[in-house]
Image (tube, rainbow, N blue to C red; front, top):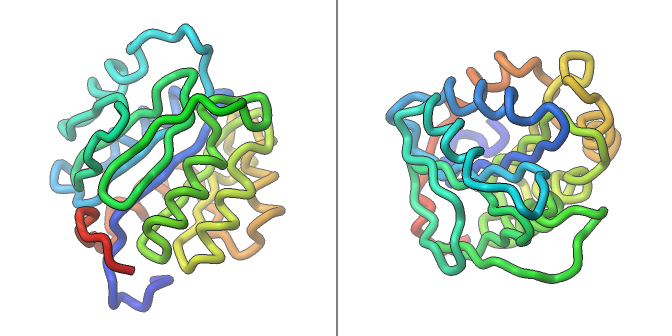
Length: 200
């Protein structure tokens, strides 16, 4: 393990765009009911999107799936979906939402969420970049890796759109590259900590 097994991971942050719905359904469907980390999903979508994404993901998992609201507590064993037209920032123990300008033409921005997660949870963060048609997420994944967290990337040859995972691999050469099924199995067995704590 990247952390030598000494500390469990508290937070998994996942970024995706083109082809992301199928990938996210596979990911959440492969997590056990006892999964002990908080999971935050950032999917590029239109600003007027409804809550269907949360519903479609909830169909695949017994874990609670909720759309992030400002100041919502970040709790282990739950799956959080970034809302459309807001940047989702991870703070120690909770989320905050921002209406600052889009980043790489996207709001929510994967980079914004990943970078805030790296600052708040450091080496206790797992960052995952899945299929997508732009380079969003690559800088944030590098920040997670630089802070001692784990960087995972869907094998670009298996992604519906390889641009996003390719950019992530280029930005983080030490990232672990896996097919989606292998990535899900790997994440499911990582040791979990407690995301409510705020120590580094």
